[in-house]
Length: 354
Ligand code: SF4
Image (cartoon, rainbow, N blue to C red; front, side, top):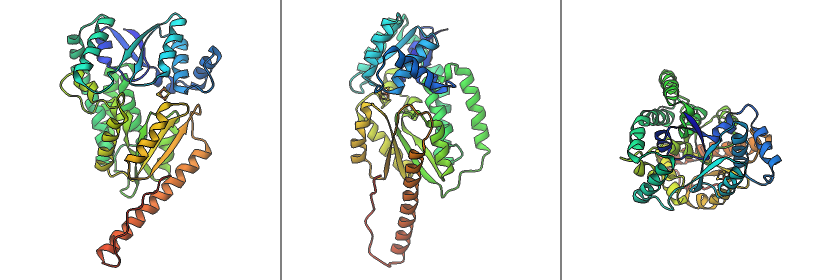
């Protein structure tokens, strides 16, 4: 199958129906043994230093890995992609625009899917057939997610890795399913993580230093049991058609769609604190204001740029945040005990924002 690069999660069912193998260029960047060199390719080509690392890495990945066809999401992801697309065209690559509707609406989405299918030379019917073929892989990813927060036998990193990979199923759907089935079998034999462990939510775009981040959290006695965007990549609300599936997918639409999803999961998963990751020079960082207004548990906002590892400054901030959450938890346990014993009047719930 001919490879087609994608700049974020898109209706890959249409691409596969058209005979393409989707390649998530973000995953190519972070899986590269030396991702910094892909960013350098872009900077040498003239991309500004204050341009997001993901955009530069995507450009570098197209050039270095010889990806000639790229589906560029121009609405519903990143405005930088519009100019990235122009540069890719300038380099002689086949950059195809794809725009999510302005708001989640299955009818509007159906138009978008029809247009994409026509552009790539396939049909909506063939794409629906692929949707059914991919569903077992999505089900496995969501099963892993359930084992993460209900059974507590999956690490935050494993959760991140397998959900984020659902954007292109690691470019090999049968192998993705086989490997994930094996992992699920291993997980079901594990002892659960300790019940006293802090439970975290990770919201925002996947981080450039994910590999380090999740492991550092676990070394400090905390675990991410909710990865917001990564879970969305696995399509947690599949609906009855592609149009419904990609209308329930929250990431491309208003931040309020995301807030609704996040608040539901924070409650359901008994989250102690939230890590909001923002990428340097990304417009989505402004959304931190909205999240802090809407979410009433402590939030730590972490920024990443082009370091693919955690530096000491970030580690210290994480440790201070976790320490505060631990003390907050003890305080609320003591308060509950005192209320049970009728020792004092109820204390107001504290709301500490880092
Ligand atoms: S992190 Fe932000 S600026 Fe970078 S590619 Fe994603 S949406 Fe665009």
